[in-house]
Length: 129
Image (cartoon, rainbow, N blue to C red; front, side, top):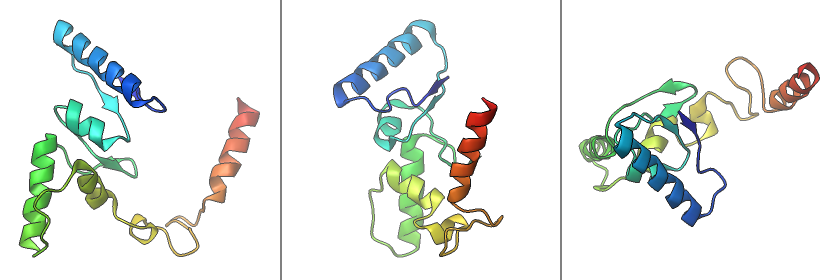
């Protein structure tokens, strides 16, 4: 399991990390679970992708399957976008704005919390840790 192994790396180092991951996969036949926010990496290097939003997996498939399904759905809706990217797939899953993510205009979520709660949680965690 690799949690965002290329975060903060320059493009050359990112490529090197992925080459190493693929070398290990090829040599061992092992499955590697990777989390990433880089949709281009997921599209290029991953066999299957499971975009998550708010802690839940919404779709699962190969990058090509997910892009194709979105293209088909958009065509059925009369939208002309024959070549969506994996980033478009994620946007479709996650929604485009705060209002689609269960937040109102003041940034309050469905449970009544807001972005300031993050600061409070961090302060509490630093005192406990």
